[in-house]
Length: 236
Ligand SMILES: Nc1ncnc2c1ncn2[C@@H]1O[C@H](COP(=O)(O)OP(=O)(O)OP(=O)(O)O)[C@@H](O)[C@H]1O
Ligand SMILES: [Mg+2]
Image (cartoon, rainbow, N blue to C red):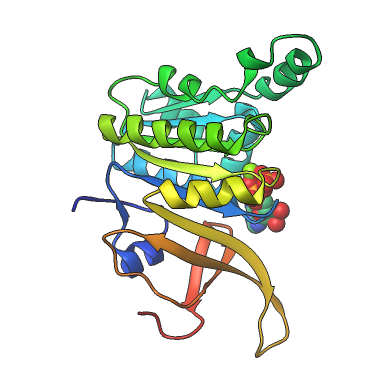
């Protein structure tokens, strides 16, 4: 199976990269590093000459570029070169609330097709940051069907996609998404049982067709972005 860089060379070494053309979920509490993971994935794949689209529903492009700069990732330059495209759907949530207050519920109910319609045909890599605010009006059946359709359409196009799941999304929706996605990584903070200190860890919840460590992987957000220090215990 073809593999795509995860954005972290340590993670590439551990799992061999993400399965190409599949949808991978990144879940985690606010501040756990989902956006940084997404940006790093985008940046590193742009350097590999992969056409990348970053859809942002929460932050505007300027904020993302600023965040990139803090790690020395020049996203602006990649955009100029035409290898990266940042699509802002930041006004989407506001629009949704406004519409919900007026009349047409149906018109605003989590229309994921927006994501697919907006991306060029030659896209290799897609990041959706994040799925959360759009889906709160959906029933679980609607969410499941739409998410499955999204995953299916992206797989048909062969686009390797990271879907970041925002904090406001319900537990039930996260579980439904986990079920359909090809892979999933959960980012979290926890207390290290040995040192008593809090640390960032990631759990590779699933990754089909891939040998994954059962143990949590500790990571830091350093000047170069997400950096996996060492597996807490031996992986495998
Ligand atoms: N330049 C930096 N160097 C080190 N750590 C940073 C840097 N920039 C941000 N961070 C850390 O990363 C955290 C934010 O990560 P990020 O924005 O990716 O989280 P998120 O999971 O996307 O959160 P949200 O759910 O709010 O979107 C910050 O709270 C901060 O702790
Ligand atoms: Mg974020």
